[in-house]
Image 1 (cartoon, rainbow, N blue to C red):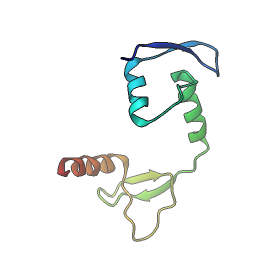
Image 2 (image 1 turned 120 degrees about the vertical axis):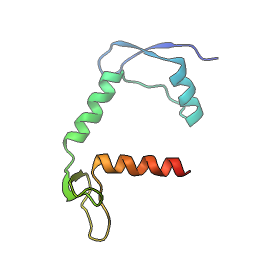
Image 3 (image 1 turned 45 degrees about the vertical axis):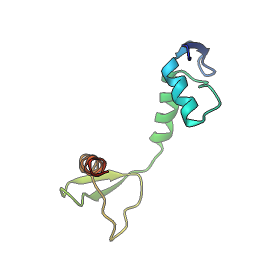
Length: 96
């Protein structure tokens, strides 16, 4: 049903492929617009916005190590390092 399409990046002007599988994913999610930037330009935009983000240091509620998070930790709310957060997420998925 879907076929790979060649699009032109509005940022850098290079051609890039919009694969059939991605098109199907976009359709399933209800996205109506095709991507306008190539993967490299999309990644660059994401990284630029992340560079300005302030990270806060906290103690991981599971392992006691340092957790760097993009929000101000509040007392009484557990904060987890990336590794422990992934483990907890995986356990939750297995339960459901």
